[in-house]
Length: 565
Image (tube, rainbow, N blue to C red):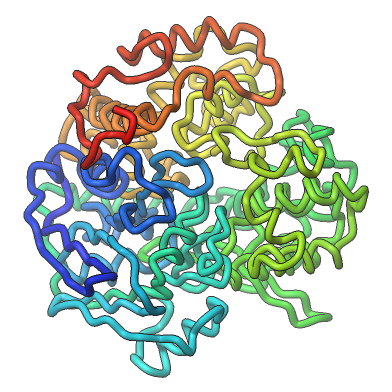
């Protein structure tokens, strides 16, 4: 089985010390990316750590496929203890940073401790440099990238940046890379902000050679990406908007409704109208990104994608596409997850009976990032403020909901329940099977949850490997079991086992922090048969019926026992 090569670089930003460590056994077992990040975080972060404390760490890792020129490989992973969900979480970002990262020669880079002053950290194949940057306090992502380019000659492809939201420890702050791409879900930007790290840069000339990659298959997939006629190339993920709306799977009016009457004003047609050039990620010929521009105002942004269109559009009852573009750009510049932020703002609009008020939306986004006024409350996330505002708690395990609503797509609802990350549509992507966006022989009836755990587990495991490779989810159209096996130089059954181990480590860590069946059975809506299917899911996974993982399955890990053990 192919895997990433290289040592782990640990950077203590408090002591400003570094150490290298061979992790060959981890790499051989967990491939790279999310798998390696999860194993290292599970074994090195104390189970009772404060997500915003110095004992938490962030593990950046890429995979073996980033050494190839294959399409769909412009991605990498970041793993840590989430201040939003209070559980172990990996977030995945596209763009261009994965190649400069592997050029440093490291398989993974771990950020630990906390600095007394605001710093930038420069990682190269010749060492690490710490730079005090007090002048960048609360600088936007764009301003920070301008500084790095002017002072160090490195463009945004080399950077991971904390915006004002991360510095102010907003629980759904993103880490921004390549200017507008985000390690978005789960608030890992707040973890970097709590460590007083404004930015990281990566460069070098020590890219490892990975033996065993099927170069003929790489070129085949790359050619297919180039020639694909997918609607995703025209409108990105927003291309699903009309269909999702028609079947009643588009959250609207803070989840009160499932269809938006004005979808034509903010959906795929609006994206195509405002898209002014092609955009892509590193080495990818699929080119699905969405550089958009409003000619009248001059506003430019990248997106919005479907989830952002939902959270700042239908869920906020906004039918002005340019206003959604502005919300997207504000989040990118301030360093905020657009899904959580849009849902949070929609919850606030519901509490104030101000749906559709775009001026209030944009003002509130800034208040959240700087924790000013009501923004200080909203920055905590819906799970922590819903009682105070008198709104329903539309979160799962503390994470705000993505679109592809589980009340219509019941298997997706089941996957929201079992996901270790909470209400994240990318964890298993059951919605693909239920719309369906796959061939008829792969599709599932969207009604009901009974008997769907087998497919759910397969999808969860596959995506865990996908995120360890690291592959973009859009690669699904080019991948089948045989191609997965050939690409990773193994067999499908082994890949399923690898994915299962990653899922189990996440669940075990979270079990040690008090997560159990009650957290899976806490959807804000009823799904008939959920309780029985959860038992079936746990049984198939070999877990306890309370949703926890036996210690014997994975070993102790965690770096330290919980305080009450």
